Length: 81
Image (cartoon, rainbow, N blue to C red):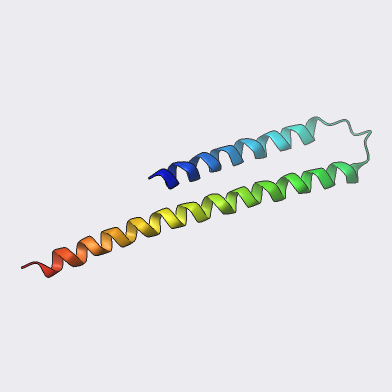
């Protein structure tokens, strides 16, 4: 349960961060060179993608353990007469 909460929290933070990065990029002055802003934006997007991948892996680990527990319970219930 703890891993699922961590994954949900990370997903929420990632979504808010993505919105913040896009808002920051949209409000930047266009007098700066565009490739510097683009470089910063790509770095932020890569960081956000890494956080999403980590959150997804945490959810997979959590639900795998939950599925294995349910499978063991089902097998033990089927073995009893």
